[in-house]
Amino acid sequence: MKLYRFLSEDDTSAFCHKVTAALNKGWELHGTPTYAFDVARGVMRCGQSVVKDVPGIYAPDIKLSEH
Image (cartoon, rainbow, N blue to C red; front, side, top):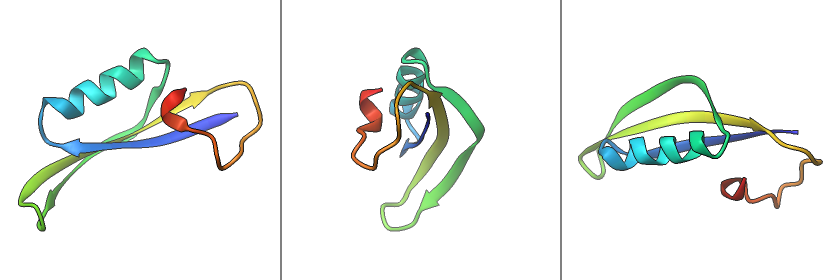
């Protein structure tokens, strides 16, 4: 099955570390990163989609972050 996650974080090194951790767990980048201003908090936010092929059958209760 193919899993999909959207990673997001404030525009700090924490975002890069989150994406790097996912890549090192076998996730692959999917599409281009996003960058937007969060008006409510007054900060820039980053986002990146990642995908991963794993054995099994999809179920809504799968904890994506554990893969």
